[in-house]
Length: 151
Figure 1: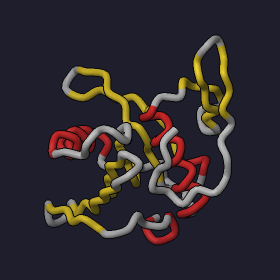
Figure 2: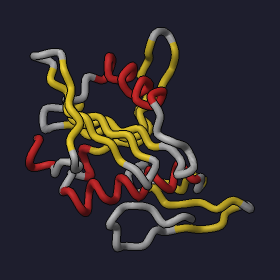
Figure 3: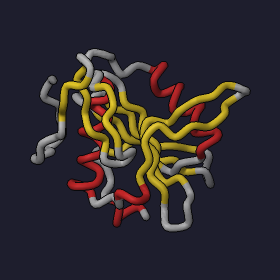
């Protein structure tokens, strides 16, 4: 798999099962097919937990919800101590360019989820927005926030 722009130092549990390359997802506690998008998602979650101090127990992958009658999934959600969505991330494969459509997608999802921070990444580029509901505004921030700074 492609080297990504995350400072992850540990290795992943990758196995070949029934002719498919699989990666162990520690949050879902099962092996999942290792696609380029899954590679980004696993590296991103590992960085959140090991690098930025996000609690593993408050982090979820592929959380389902309904948006305008359609079943949708958030790639990564992190909750605060009260169970409110704190951060939502949309992960794309490295070859997928981060476009306005990707930001529109996570923005639409956030009308339901109501996370305070939105992150879009393809593993090579990362964009993070802080949502200011009081002023109906958002701002891009330069670095991904540490959990202790936003929880």
